[in-house]
Image (cartoon, rainbow over all chains, first blue to last red):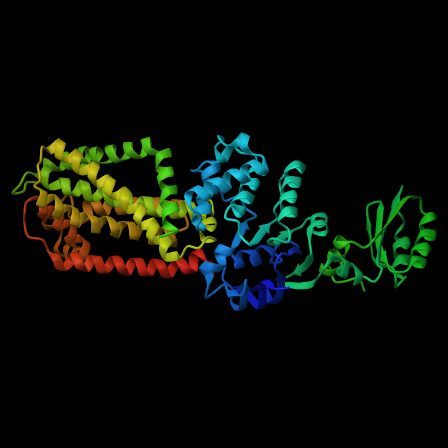
Length: 308
Length: 249
């Protein structure tokens, strides 16, 4: 498959703080690539760098084979960007907010108006057309930003936490559209929503302190846990401190954490779980839950020092 | 030009939304300065020509320069600092030069409109009449003043990301334009040391050129071209700063 976006040893620092450290990755054309990371991990920075809002210090970035430094105007016109913050123009109405930005990306007045109408209808906020921007609900503002990113029909879509603040209906409308665009556009989105990342990604990159800790398909990422299982035990009263001390003596019970009346831990061996369960039964165990390791568990494990 | 025309359309839509308050400002500003500066000063200053006619140049200069400076610096403050709207523009295929050119064009258009309102109002109030050549000469000088203050407003808007500081700068600028640069009080009334400093600024002579055009006196073209040079230097400095400010290097 042909590369749509390529990062080669990209570095960015502000003062003494390293924001991106020797970052390299590629995104194939027509695929959906998800950036997951805690606040300040560099997700938004990567997207801003792609649309030229921030300049890198070192390395190279290519969009559709064109260097974003030497062909910045061309690469920017290939991208549709939805920022995390709402930066709509309050002096314009909803229609002009979308249409003008379509024209900025080279559409004629008629094309921009036609596309604007199309997205307004598809995203279902026609009834808000006469409302001043500042009085609109947050979710609608996010939908306008989404439409603005799509109005010039860019081959690369960059979405920074696209569904944050949206109600479930709006969220599903956005994902339905993205589902339809899947394979025809390269979609890169940053999120902290693990369910959406698992559901809509072709590839996921877990970012931590400006670098990719792990990336690949969801299945491959889960495989790396080698059958790690997440266990949750609930107690009707808090277990005594010696219970936790005993637990720490089991080397294959990973990351045990007692939060109030709930104990969480990971293990690759069922036998270990049975041992803990036997102990727990002596301390008012009220409920238990086991689940295979998902993206959320992997993310927590990776960003908090690993499972070993 | 591709990226500039949609943004000019955006500015037109913004103007339409606030047209009443902007036009009121254009009308009231010259009247207010005429009433609060020209009329009281006419009682103390005597010149070879009627003071009110001479000082109308000051009204045009002070109002249109202030409007140009205010529009450009406010535009940048609002777009860049208050709403971060500028990011939506910067992500499109627009160069920094196109963007600051657009801001300077916007400031200049507002400044020219202010000048047209001011010249009409002062001419009506003073019953002054100008020949076509006089108007052409006045306009040629005013356009450079307006462009310079638009560029200066852009520069200040880029380097000062604080509304309160900008308000202080507006006050200082207004004081300078009205009482510090010979627009309402002839420079012969100031101490020699101050005049020698002020006369090192080429735009002071462009102000004098506007006053000279009213009474058909000769124009000093050297300082006119020096001001154009200064204008280019301000644009180049602004362009260098935009790279640091807009793209957050």
